Image (cartoon, rainbow, N blue to C red; front, side, top):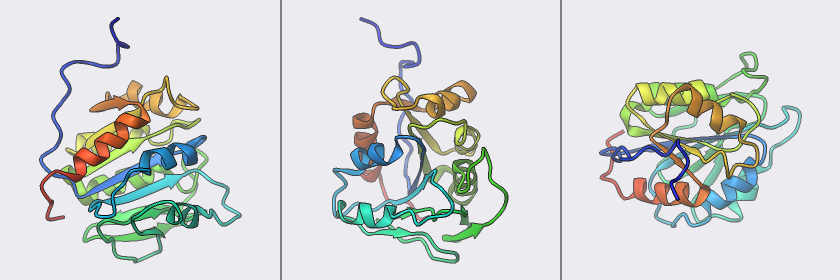
Length: 208
């Protein structure tokens, strides 16, 4: 039986190199991320930047949760913190997470975007300008359109884009909004996105 219409053959090739992966999720995102990262090896070399929508008035606990389950370093991003390879960074609650040219984070108290701070769009757009073609971006389950415009920016600036298959997502609104705005390079279930991370990690190292 033919697959869904949004799986266009042939697939675009993987990029020549990737230095970092930006990831956004909302409703259902924590469980999706636990599955996505479950098989990351201890020598995983890419930087991972993650925004998960969360209440602003409480500690997220995400860095502690994932540090207990993963074999790579996990940190909550801080203002002016330099980016290190092979490390997973979560945006802190109540701040937009931005990537600066030269490889460091900045935090912003600008108004919420799509009712969210941190906003996935802000992460994707600033990371796209900081990394260009050396960035990959993944958008997972969620109940808003946050991330769609940012993912489109990643693609326009030469980065590699992928979304969770809406048919599998707990809440399909977010990945579907991205598909409707600009077709991503891959539309995959979580198992496929996990395999994609492994494939990106095997690409030649980027100087970024």
